Image (cartoon, rainbow, N blue to C red; front, side, top):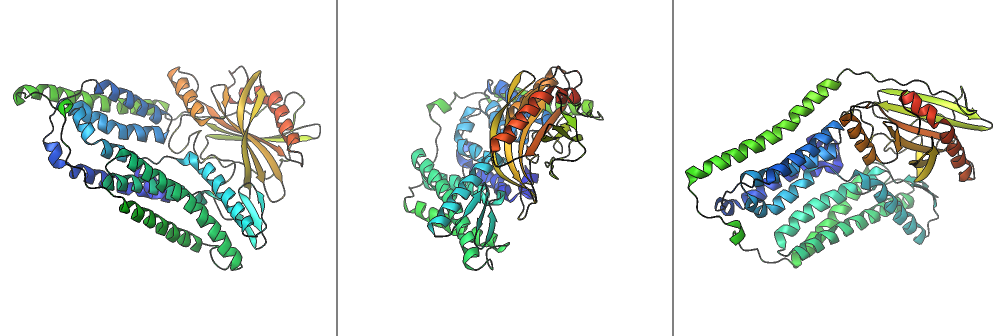
Length: 481
């Protein structure tokens, strides 16, 4: 988590979460000192289940699962050793600690689409003619693109964490707290839209002399900071008096006990909790050593059903994959059609090389002047090897070509477009002792004025060649996408 906070501005607010959590606990130190200590034994099996989820995340290098599980272990461990009354007393601090987990990358495409929709609509209302192609649009003064950093995800997460802490401090009722957080998030999203529109208009009016380089980040940050300051100032107008000191209720008290007799159960709860917490990491280390040194390879894809290998590629495009164990790129032709296929092969997931990494993409994640642009995304149904599977689609524009690409994951003989299902299939393969070889598969063909033609070509190719693709990845497979 710390590595992510350091490397990504989106999650740099994570450095403030732990100090804020400690402060939230410290301000309740006098109340905590009066709480009874009563181990909660049923919290131990809950801790074991959460630890198992942590192990599953470790096995698949799914950072989100391991990090959420790690944070969830803290309140459950406190409940097991000290009692549920401690968790109730520190419910908000424990909930606030989850903001340390870097989550929400999957929201970026949606936020980018919203930003592009608003910016284009606002420009047209301002009398500026716009030609839009996906996340890229052109106006008379130049071309613009909505990239990842324009999504506003950085501002949204910082606003979520800060507004939650602020609402807890100035309001007493849950309704007002949730309303304030919801309003702050809505304003943050809209403010990012206005920021994007204002930057484009500044560039347009100034003939691209201002707000077209790094300075637009500065202008945007200052604007967003001003908006959030106004939101918090407005919230302070309706602030409520400080809540009275928390006191344990009848359900939180226990009969007086002899401290000497209580030492045994408390010590036993602590030992069992530590044993549960240390057991799974030990299994993870042994499992990792067992997989070390295994090589991964892939045979060339054999021609089939009239598709023949071609020496000339469809285009000079290739997807961006993060450290695959092996790569196969081929081109096939049938009649007047040409299809390129690119397969990145992965073995057991590691933090530096995993099938479902967000770094595995059709095009570069960001950049002011990318060579290839992803202008449209969607899904389609593909038929192959007697099976039907969803695939993700993308329209790519390059210097001289326009392509339609389909992409899916291949795990243990099964095709899926869902990263979550791919991870589950990887877990099941390991538990069943089957091959853990998996693949990130993409096929592409030129797109003409009629998009349905390119989709039909890819549909025919997948139907004809899915068995050859599966055999090249896993010779023992019976075929299928």
